Length: 173
Image 1 (cartoon, rainbow, N blue to C red):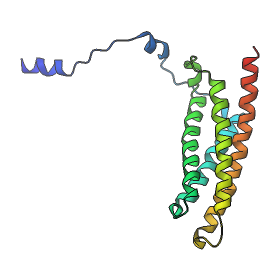
Image 2 (image 1 turned 30 degrees about the vertical axis):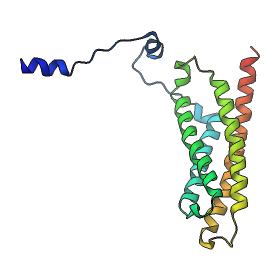
Image 3 (image 1 turned 30 degrees about the horizontal axis):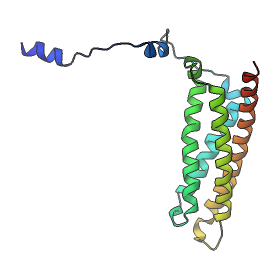
Image 4 (image 1 turned 120 degrees about the vertical axis):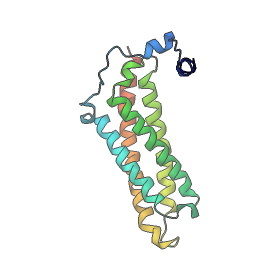
């Protein structure tokens, strides 16, 4: 009797909805796009991840909290780094093909456009906050982070261009 109660207590009843059915895959194989990383947007995403990682680790390795402007740079760098890694996973695993309800071209354009604008402002704040008088031992790290922040901004500008081209061709149909 006690064993039957124990067995029932661990029984889970599941129901499927039409929402869950729309997102289920019909095959158990893991789909991924090997060629995406060879395309210009794929190369730019990889560059954004590597350079963005350099931006926030160069600042995080210092006493950046003493200069309030670096808080903004850290927020932008870490926020967009995490989201860019997420989008790389979405593109490599072809998740966007399994969720057709999401307008991926519009999402990509909004993401890359906002990343370009906010990273550009963060790069300017980063560069204007670097001075040899403030905490001399942090100068090299902050100057390097400023340089890489501008490089990441250029990468996001490039991806914004490619996203705009994809969005325009999608909406023209």
